Length: 224
Image 1 (cartoon, rainbow, N blue to C red):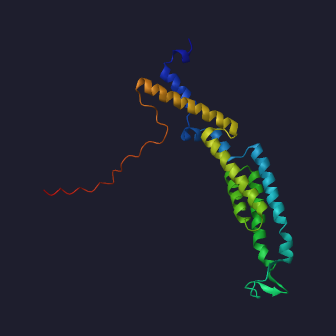
Image 2: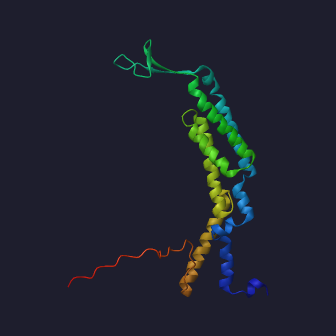
Image 3: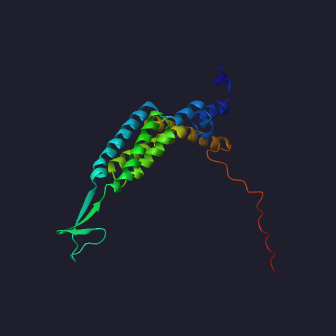
């Protein structure tokens, strides 16, 4: 007779639940899981290099504006005059942007794209997510491509990091499978607890204990 057959039913059930119950402290204490949380896998790096390349390519499109500046033209208002900072040119209102207006955004986005590529190459998950979000925020005004690419990549990494911390896997198919198994285990625990009258094992955080430093004010005696 094996050890599992000799072990009582509650012990076997506890072994089963320990495999599928989310325990953040136990998971994060695993060296392999900590390493996976800190680094990028092959798929994430491949997509990261693509995202960094798109960001850098979009930054290069700003070079003509850095060299020659740009103009923004609008139709003249009904009253026949242009408001600052526009000035009248023929029948239109024109605002000139000098090349110096684009130097700072160009340098900032170029540095962000370079650091993002370096973070992906070094497989640094936290820095990659931060630079992706930063690229999306910085490129919101000047380039929709940079915004969509940087923000989308960073959010995708955040979702995969959350799955890895909670379930130990990243792909949605494995997450659904583990979630269903955990739900079945919890359902079995509640059913067994109702049958035996035992208290089911708590799945959330323990209730906070009252602070010893705080003392409730004494209530005044009621007047007769």
